[in-house]
Amino acid sequence: MIIIKTKEEIEILREGGKRLATVLHKVKDMVKPGISTWELDKYAEKLIRDMGDYPAFLNYKPEGADFPYPASLCVSVNNEVVHGIPKKEKILQEGDIVSIDLGLRHNGLYTDMAMTVGVGEISNASKKLLKTTEQALMVGIEAAQCGNKTGDIGHAIEGFVRPHKYGIVEVLSGHGVGKYIHEDPYIPNFGKANTGVKLVKDMVIAIEPMLNNGTKNVVVDNDGYTFRTADGKRSAHFEHTILITDGEPEILTKI
Ligand code: MG
Image (cartoon, rainbow, N blue to C red; front, side, top):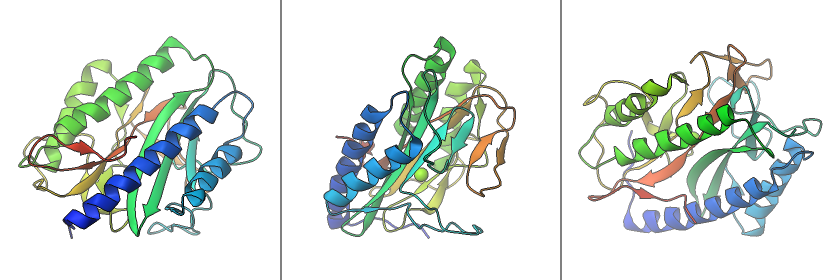
């Protein structure tokens, strides 16, 4: 079921999105060689709790999972695509790329955001992967116009990415968000125009392309959470929570 948000809910989501963006940018500024992914998680959790809000992913149990997610932040390094579990012994190294993905609950409502950042100096190939993935997100957002369909978002992203020859992860997607961290509809990062669910004013969705510098195929680690590329090549992930309006889509996860 698609949940259309009320004016009051949208105000809360706007504030929550701003808070989430503020936290994630602060976490981004902490990314440097020598820091553990666990430290990034603890920092994100502290910033959220200090504002009186709640980390949305902590103890969240997706359908089919054996145990709830044990952290606030997903930290996915290099060939990890998404849902990397932070660990004390996992230390970031110069030249790594790291995806940080965070959900926040403010006044009962959820927003979701992710970005991939370089650790110290990164290769030109990694810089291009990050830049293209972020651009793919913006192309997807631009297609999220009232009256368009969810398939138009995926179609726009796929059309933009195709010349770059990156693998677009297909088994993971964007989603509605707000009352729950994952709601309908499903927002693909590939596919046919004019298919799927119609976008209407006051829908709130998360768009989140994941691009691999190789095959689109992914595998899941034994921990049940960590998705990584099947060929071991690097992957990037950018995500915003956005509001469908009768004009341009509004990015809620911005400072
Ligand atoms: Mg998401």
